[in-house]
Length: 224
Image (cartoon, rainbow, N blue to C red):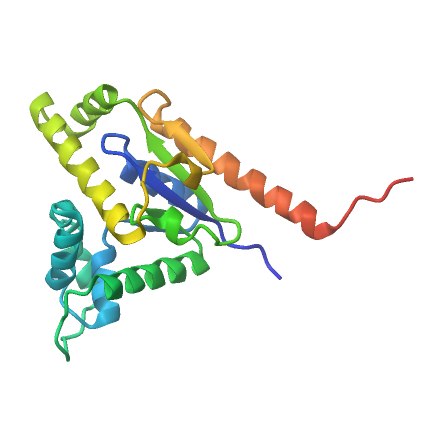
């Protein structure tokens, strides 16, 4: 059997540069980057409209769809959404099932997956590395101002809204805390460690795990 394609999930608190880190990491590992455009993917699976899927997310996260839907139109065009042939029901269980199916198919091919509670959905996926980017609130606000070119008031508002929406999303779907470090193999303060270094650390961790797995598959060492 050939080598297993790398799978990395990233949970990123607001202001930690999750999208930047995820994109660079995917490039380094040579796999696809699955960002928060997943609503378009799910809509394609359900043969439904992106705005209907985002409506479910609005109910789940109370604001989550505002920033996630920014990615949806491009994603919908890319996958070529079919016209709906049945009624859409705002069913949280169906949504959860479809998101899980999309994440698992992406992982089977190898991917860097940002958000969506992927560390929880893929917690039993063999070889997957689960990463959390976090940091103190004030430093995340300062970093968001620097990266996004926004003022402190806007950054502070975005932080509270986005962090709360992401917590609600994971809590309602998976009944747990997205920031619980027990779900992650690697937790990095991305307000202190430069993002390029964060990427280097994750690549090193992925490479190390692959080497350990290869040693295990080779069997025990022979001794004289």
